[in-house]
Length: 110
Length: 112
Image 1 (tube, rainbow over the protein chains, first blue to last red):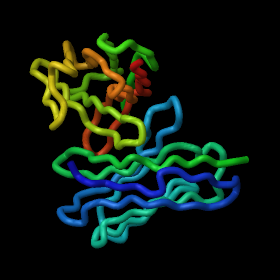
Image 2: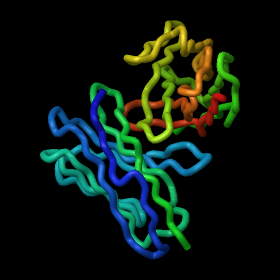
Image 3: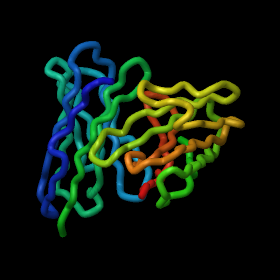
Image 4: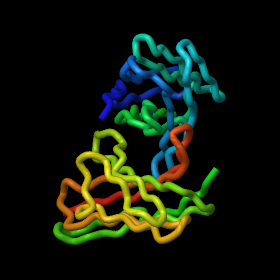
């Protein structure tokens, strides 16, 4: 079982504010890092797959960066909206399997 | 992409009983995966279900506790047997590869 840690566990953001949070993973034998978004009562959905050190991915107001040498990824939400409220999971890919973190739950207050 | 119907969406069960969770996929898939997320914990892979063969269980999970059926390429069930409060979790089925997983909407299980 690989140690994938996410922090903080939860955060509250005012609508319109920007925020970011962290995923830490083993820096050795890196293959890929995934981000998923999981809204309440819905299925988790894939956001990004990141494979190269220095990768930056963007989808609308959400973006992510990757540092494989130090073993961390940041996910950013710019100008948070209530529909961004969800749990964001990162997952470390190893041997064709995903090891997930416990997630960061984001609540956007109107 | 794949659309997965999972049921029940939630249930409250008494300890010592069993619950079977069903997942139906809108296309044929070779492998289906079953995950569990206990409160405050990571989403953890329970087992991989292949059609026509026994499921492959991850460390810490056993067939007697989590029997899985995979009768065809679009359907699978996971049974949580002899439940205890520690089994209270969200259970998810998924399909796809490591490059991208598609999930069911989950089963919220509470064991009293």
